[in-house]
Length: 180
Image (cartoon, rainbow, N blue to C red):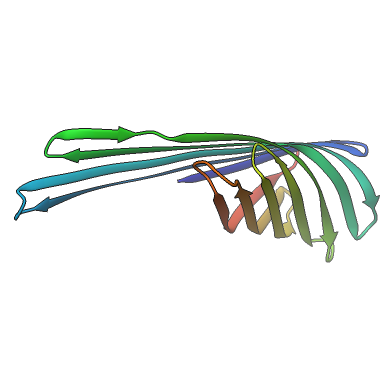
């Protein structure tokens, strides 16, 4: 399961952005080895949070294009729970990791016409991780009630040692934007 949400507030040239991703995956298996008369069972669960917060300032605002510089921080946590059962003897491991990283980047929109537009975002940073970056682009269509978006997003984390060495989260998503 993956849940994503974002919030943006604007006043004049200033903006505040918050972005949240929650992911949870789990699985279990049980195997019987008859020649050893042994049953091995396992359960795994991966839970992650990826929360980004930015302040932004608009530097380009024309009829066709907007461009904001953004700066902020990203929080990333990953918890992995593993349980093994061998003939009713349980072994459990629960490693976890947390990163706090400072970010700088840009976001903006290019208007194709009055209804179609292309929003884009890029940020890069570091801190607890050696490097993190994110890139996304969307194709949006404006309705009277809000917008529909088709997005492709890529988020990368790099750490030279520890539980996470390389972590990539990427893929398409379909979204809805409500204007207040």
